[in-house]
Image (cartoon, rainbow, N blue to C red; front, side, top):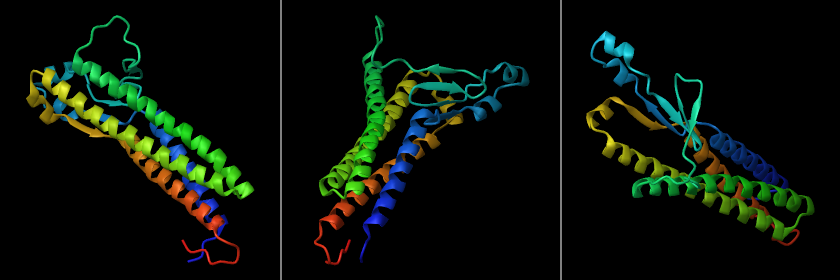
Length: 218
């Protein structure tokens, strides 16, 4: 199958831009982790108690957590500086994991920016080595994104176990819906687009490296 360099350039530009926009949107939004307590609130014992129950439903991002019925959000604890606070080992582990994914995911965005710049120059100059570099940057960025997302999922599981350990009435969790949100889904789609972008750049490097006049199968 013959593949034109222009088609690969268009595919790389499209998937690269898509991966950047999706990951930037995911990082900037607060729907990574959703806690829905509607069932718990509706099962309150008596109308009077139900009226006094404070809505606890919330959605969280990488930097803050927001109550559903509150206009303001609460920043998460700074994982890089706790002042003179004394924290337990489990809390310290959570802070370390938090600090890890808030570094990895923005780092992936930076790698995509550099990959996009070198990719633009590589197609403009038809430079084989720049195409290889661009593909490598995007594939490495995809690996960084995967690592960041994996650490976030592990962080969420560890935070849930900690909350479960501290909660006295563990049966209450049966009436609380806890799930990952669409921000995390955007991150996974961005990861896939990043992979495709890296593959497109490497395929373009292979096409450009073939001798002129030779068929260019991919």
